[in-house]
Image 1 (cartoon, rainbow, N blue to C red):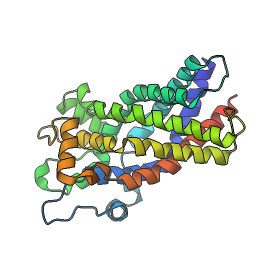
Image 2: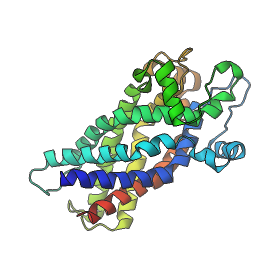
Image 3: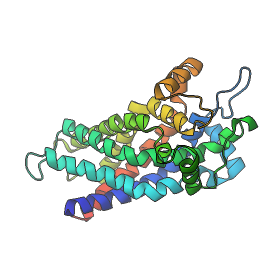
Length: 297
């Protein structure tokens, strides 16, 4: 139980660091992912990441970049605490003896298991976040879209529970969330361990400096998005899809329609901001986790 408490605490601190650094990048990513496809002869609302930043700042000010942060801020402690705690417990199960280092392949298994657990928390949280982040782009696509204007995270939750099938509505997009979190976390924790062992020159990584941890954490975060990004695009469009007049019948249908209408490029909308976010945000997360965990003994 002592190890669980330490992982809970360190995961909470790491998650807070990740959110503060990464949320503005995430806002731009979701805006690019969820903007409606332009009609023939028309330009898209945002021509790219920098254009989305400029339009957001002009219309909403700096606060617009942090829109939707209330939902992940309220759950960031639980999310990262759960992620690192499940990973820690799986590490304990896979160790041949207490304190023995794990192989990279074992860390991949630990990451996949942690990904299953956090998906059930990530799905409703990200649905709320995506609705808030995307609504300004969707609202300006035309008055006929029937876009609901939300006052905040609780307003989104109340609306979904009341008008979109109750609790089931909050778990819309659970399939692509699992398809993102399981392989994504497997890749991230595997790459993180591989890089730490490379920098340490062996399996004992306890003496690594903060610079090495920052580089390993940043590149590990990049590997997450590099391995699963199209799945995240599908998740986002499913979660912001109109409940009464849906464009997509499910994840496979969304994937096919995006591929048909926009090509492979459509599955990588917002990839630039996602990668730009992943390196500093995950570097901050892993460093904060490792420092906090070490300070707890």
